[in-house]
Length: 329
Image (cartoon, rainbow, N blue to C red; front, top):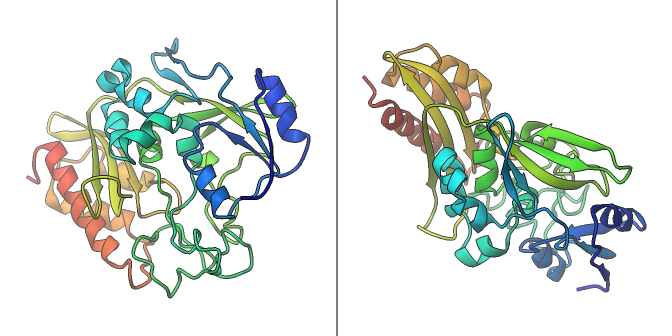
């Protein structure tokens, strides 16, 4: 680990000022990902700004009927919160499907969203990786790529996004509130927060330098059945090969509304509005679900080792839709 400054400001304003005083500064809260990156020499910040002293640990109801979640709320607290369990069970289940209990106790809401890929080559400083060192190449393309993405990839990066919580947040239409060093506040959907790798895979989000996430905002809960399904190599402490966050409402024998988000298959938490639109107004059927799977996978590209994700996603999605709607009819 290389030398760095460490400060712990007491206010948001002081934290933002400290983050802009010198380049290569990182905010740190739970540190469950950043410290690993620093130990391996993958991230070498010159300064750590510890934000654990900020008042960002509350969960409150909004006037619209949603929830406003502080950036420092531990994952375990969020999953166990009575309003989350009763009104957003999808989110609670997704969080409990990720990491270990010890990590969930330490990891924060904002940190979960900003964790970096678990690509083997990203964590191997001896291997070329465009995400870690731009222009060096992508070892996963043509390499061992079983856990890599099949959607949203580029010829420079095929790393998948690791977060379970972010997949649930996408299905729930969550947004992120942040504040810049100028004091300006911003709100972004998760689609606006994350970036596809393209030719700049080393940049994961659209956050500006020194911009601090303060809250997550959940809209009022959508009606319908909530489901989070995660397929992984073992029952605990494993990242998703395929995961699906689903909210589907059936009224009078037809699908009235549908929200589908996917993990393990995309370079960012994935959502397909066209596939959702294809479900709405239709009676549940095996033919319909197969068509929806075709839509989700229309641009999927396997790289050999991860080809199985295409058929795995298809089977998992159709089975989930059949179960949540009461059958294939």
